[in-house]
Amino acid sequence: MPRDIGQQNLMDPSRADKVSRRTVVRAALGSWLAGRYGIPAGQVRAQSKTATPSAGRTAGTPSGRTLPAGIGVSSEVSSASGQPKSGGALRIVRPGDGLGNFNPSAFRQDPQIPLSYLEPLVRPDPTTMRPLPWLAEHWEWREDGLELVFKLRGDVLWHDGAPLAAADAAFTFEVYRTDADSAVSGLFALVEGLDAVAERELRVRFTVRDANWLFNAATLPIVSKSQYGAYWQGMSASRQTLSEFDWSGALPVGTGPWKITEWGATEVEFARFDQYWGSEPWLDQLEVTLLDGPHARLEAWQDGDSQMLWPVRMPEVQTLNDATGTLYPVPAASVMFAAFNFVNPNQPAGSLWTDLRVRLAASQAINRERYAEEVFGGFTRWQAAGAVAQPWAHEDDLTIPAFSPDAASVLLTEAGWIDYDGDGVREDVNGWQFRPVAILREDSRPELAAVMARVARDLAEVGIALTVEVLPADEFDDRWITRRDYDLIAYAYDQLPGFTDFDLYGSAWDIRSNAAGWNPGGYANPDADAAINEFLGAVSIERQATALQRLQRVVDEDLFGLWLGFPDDLVLVAGGIEGFTPDMSWQTARTWDLWHGSDRS
Image (cartoon, rainbow, N blue to C red):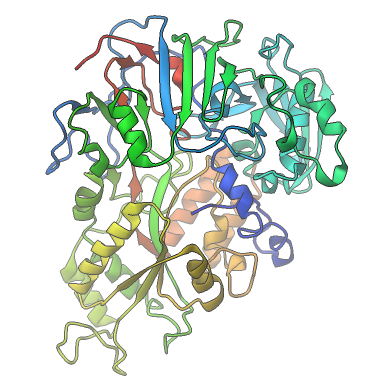
């Protein structure tokens, strides 16, 4: 499910309406692509770290799952055996059906392409997702958080030999902000101005503090003003867009470790950029080919036409009988949960969940360890509580209550839900049966429906007869935005480096009273509102983290929804490819760290 990027003072609804979840949904669709990068150059290129599994995640081969003989499962978060060596090419097949639009703000290409030749001012740390210096070597908040000043590196060259300048960054951000096709214009809703105040100094001015800008906007890739600036200035102000640029007239240039040498309808070829400011790739060439359909991409990997495959699902891996490689289950900023609806017009009492004991009982009745094994092969953090997957902000001390149908039954009985007629479904004192309805979108990741089916089975064991409705997108939107006649709403999505889900919990974002909101169930808790306000008013990452950890504790104690865990990413790396290291923002971004080793098949 996409997330919006705009943020305002939560407790001022008049401002909240200006930047919303639904009005910037196009921003969300593109913004999740932003900032999918790796660690700073100069750090150890090939390192083998032993993973410390998070709570509830299995390391190694999943129990009860048989994988093909040629596919090993790595219990380490990186692959590096032997010394790196230069030379050779890497092929990656990615989703998509066209390459003709290189407009960075439109996000019409698979992210693997721009991530290969373009770079941002800052990158998310691959393991924590905190901002790290990249094209900007330093930044500083000024004017009480209303100005953000970047100092750019002085040794960066564009692929055409021109030096990087602050004017390039100012121009790029203006494109993201105003391009008619921009998918991320919502990121700039609080930006008042962008100024190149010196050759290597960029100043961003805000109308109010923007807690997420450094995380989610500063990680967007920068393009060359000298390549596109004249064209941009020559367009009508009413319809300025780089989407209509003649991309065939000149190869797009960037500052990244790879430079484009040729592109066609479905393939981009890159060569190593020998004047790259950081550590150059070990390989000589990179080829990214678009291919529609997950099964087609799986076959391409199996046939050796793609040496990295992500995303991939466990059932797909089990079909690879004639391939060799390594499966890496690695941490991801992915979350699954089902939010309670506290204001359902179809419920006589308004909601089934008003009593906290009922919410806690539903949570305790779920056998998460079982669905973790059955659906994810054990590769999910099923014991983790909450819906904040970004490591820099996650509250590690929170865990879900132990699975206990007996304890759940006691809580339900204490709350007045009893199976009076012996049909297996509990009723209240008025005879109203406990028959909640859960909704989810049919285009959600497939594991969500599988998990909810098992949740329904578990809840039935304690007398809760849950119905799960899988809906087309338009019907789903009608249900949660207009009709609001459901008891649970299930989501599964990837998260940006910055925290953009404040409107999920905030009372000022209740969809019933704020058409611009995303709070789908009318959840309201003053302590949650206070924590969100503290986050929105902060530019210090430490202060933001403290506020978000407080928020997570509040919405766990006054339970917001059923926490369904944080699934791992599964990445397949072909035999003979060394140096893979995961990145929570984009798992296959760090192609410059890869090399050809001996085939371990």
